[in-house]
Length: 80
Image 1 (cartoon, rainbow, N blue to C red):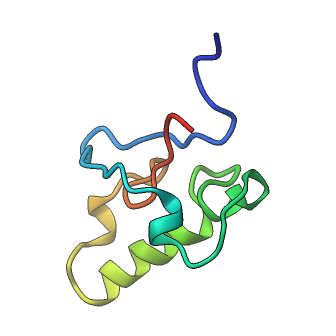
Image 2: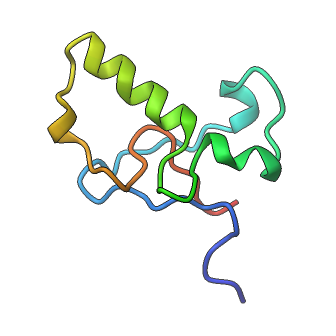
Image 3: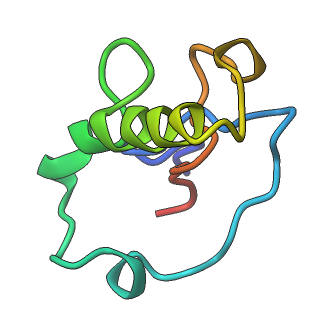
């Protein structure tokens, strides 16, 4: 039994409210394991997560110091 799927992200402990929405319902195109760099890269965050964060910073909802630098808050992937 595998404890963690190969494309799971590290989830936020502080911001632990996630949805069970199907990625096909919320993303415009099919998502495959090879597109995982959009979610999480070697530094812990991918382009989509960084984009969501930047949007929240720019509209003034959150400050850069509020979000963990190495955990996905907006686009966590878990349990395949």
